[in-house]
Length: 199
Image (cartoon, rainbow, N blue to C red; front, side, top):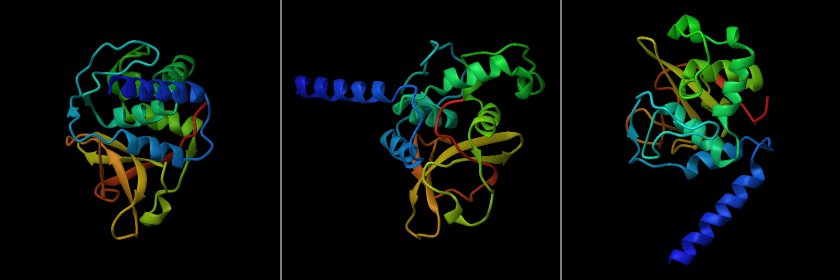
């Protein structure tokens, strides 16, 4: 049993390393990666914590909505912590860090874990897609951002069609773990992106 687990882990590492720093060839790769990290036991914890850089992560049993996106890309060898930090470092005034959080310098512990920063990053380095009320306009691998009201933003990844067939499901974490739900139009959509890696 231990040998089998070791082989599986080594295979995963080899596959991940072969992807590292590469662009995706199709957005469905992100959808598949997101489905691979579904875990309803993840505890929702928005605490600020110090994490390594690059490839840092919070406790794997904890996380927020942005961690779903970060972890899905990391399965494919794309480190949003590094990519977002480098873009903020080089283009600080493009991001809402000073205006929204009153900070004058980048912070590798938290910047990539904030929805407004990811929205800027995906707008700058990905494809900005139309916001519509047609569920079929949102494809597997698309990233969606919502305004929950009261200044609270949310993010998730479109993965696959739901039972009704007229829209796709989303993987996100809003307090019930990293789960897939039919929640695309539950809140007001404010961002719709496709990002295949790179800057």
